[in-house]
Structure formats: C-alpha cells, structure tokens
Image 1 (cartoon, protein in one colour):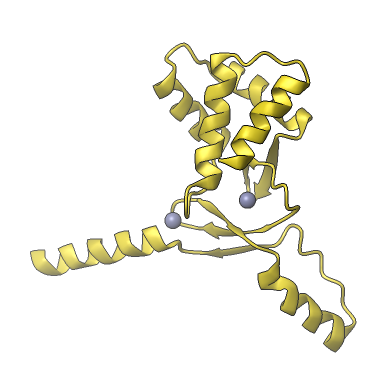
Image 2: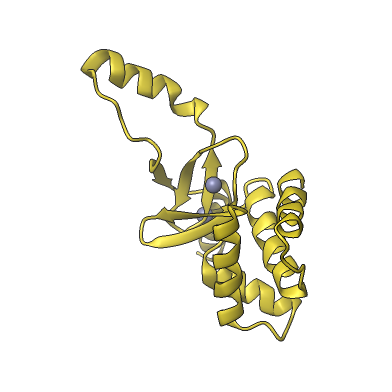
Length: 158
Ligand SMILES: [Zn+2]
Ligand SMILES: [Zn+2]
C-alpha cells in the first residue's frame, strides 16, 4: 500500500481536500493495480465499484476525480487496445502490460523481462524498439482456470 499512501500524501501536499469520493476512487484504483494479479480498471469499472462503496457517486465525479489524479501525476492512464485503464503511477518508472483478451484485464510486466529482447534487437538489427507501449496479448491465469472448469463441466454433462 506504499503507492496508495504516497498518493494520499500528494493530494494533501498540493492542497486538495480528501473527500470521500476522492478516497474511494483512489482506493479502487489502488486495489486494482496492487492486488496480486489484479487487472487495471477502465472508467466504467471504477464507476461501478465506486457506486457500490458510495451510492451517491455519479460518473461525472469519477471522470473529474480521475482527471484531477492524472493532473497531479498520482494516477497513470494506460491505453491498451481500444480501452483506457487506470493505475497508480509507478514510482519505479514505466512497465509493460500483459492484456487478457477474455476479461480485458491488464497486468504489469516489469521492464527487465524485455531488456534481453531489446538487446537482441539492438545487436542483431541495430533496431531501437519503442517498448513503452508494448503489450502482450493472451489469456490470464484466472480465465484459463475458468475455461478449464467450463470444459470439465461440459464433459461431466455429456
Ligand atoms: Zn482474463
Ligand atoms: Zn500497469
């Protein structure tokens, strides 16, 4: 929860009030980015979760709050495919993403996994890749499990 605490501290230092709406949106994004294997959330997912925690939440407030957080550098907007995800800003700099094509979840991939790949492209082709926007598409562990379970059920029924 270090990133989460830091984000709250930033809001406070820059003179922004810690309203319930702001704290809720922040903690939703924090749980999405920090839970092990947790995906990053789109605006609608943030809104749905926020409404559950605070029934008076409206989507305009979610947009406004995300805009404020982005401006303060507390939250980073990640464009993956045709969707925008939000995550707490990574204090260690940039990371890549693995994107599940079943649930649309986006998972962090530390840059060191691609360091060797970058080296190879440099050495073999003299090519400098733009890996900042690199995302690997596939199926996440959870969806693979769900897929297996569904298949097993089918077999039992047959
Ligand atoms: Zn998935
Ligand atoms: Zn990320």
